[in-house]
Length: 300
Image 1 (spheres, rainbow, N blue to C red):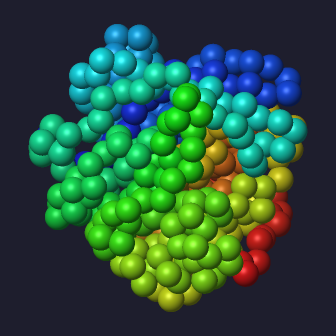
Image 2 (image 1 turned 90 degrees about the vertical axis):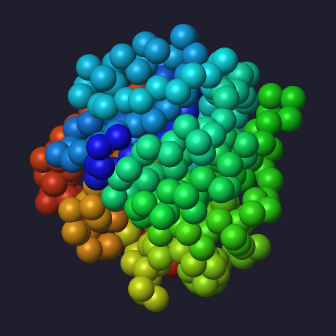
């Protein structure tokens, strides 16, 4: 495969998103939201996913949007149900079907400056895949999948036994506050971020929903504001994935951490104002940054 700027590896899902306003069926997963967001940016990007026949419509739509998609075979497509109450920082999840994992041997030809891994469940990606990809480029990891498993269709939080070994090879790690606490045993943002950095992570990204986000890099904390939507909050599904698309896009262009984080937060705000993936442009994000004040979370 040709060397590109960013390669995302992850399953596209079939989702049922239930909010207090509606129930909507749509494609989803880190791979879906991340890819849609980057399809709007000027960057060489590829998605590697695994779906069954019922997931190919989502693949076709991504290809129509200009995304280079490599599809690996799978007996099933992942099927998630996401249920939100009034507080869209929190959700209940059920998993009705799971897909085949990503064997390292099938990714031997992948080549990129940055690999963004978006596992959804603990067995999606073997831990040995991380150092193999790190030998070819920087690895960015969304930790959520390694911290949850399915029991009777319910998503259950679990620890990640291989975390100390695997995170030595991760350049950029994205977690939310609960995932950071699960990994480190710490509830304090500063303490947890420093532990993850001590384990080898170069840039620790901790998203905090409506409170913003914190990035710890080069022994310095960056408090990133959350931007207030101009309309109501419609659907928070995929906001973290949209954030990471914006963050990695700007970091790949040489933007410092603070600026990349603010761009990412603005992208997430634009996404949350509607159902489905981000459908704006880089200019829309820059316009929001120029016109709106954000409320910064002070890391503790």
